[in-house]
Image (cartoon, rainbow, N blue to C red; front, side):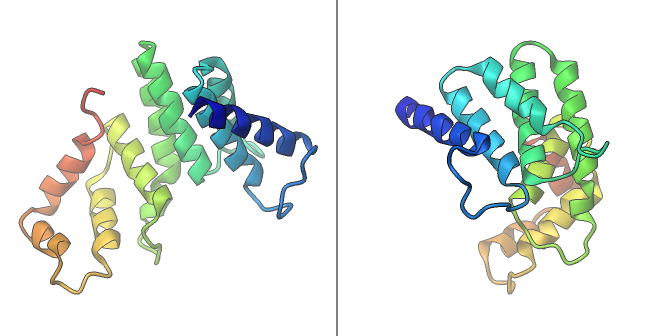
Length: 177
């Protein structure tokens, strides 16, 4: 795995510097996804300072505002975990809380489909301890919306109340790692 991580960092650095053109070019978010992947590769290699630097870059405001995105949410989860590992629990919780608040619009029920950004928002709400019942219930609605009623998911969700489901989701990422 380290050899692949080193190569990934080399290729990402070349793309970010323009030595290798991004293909296709000018896709919104391309740079942020490259930074996220470089942070992950640096973590694998034990380059925690480089990893954290990229994660902090991803959390920087753009036009005065940190925008909700997959990379922003993923970087908040990772950065918080790095901080928590070093004993900075309050700082980790604050990062998770801010990112959860920024991502709450994903639960607005406006026709959004289930995707990885929604899962990250759920994780952030759990990690900061502030996952709202309504958000947990909207997540379950989205996950089960295509279900015709005969699946294991339908049977499982029929056995629990919305309140117990929300409580389980609120606590599921807070167990010791």
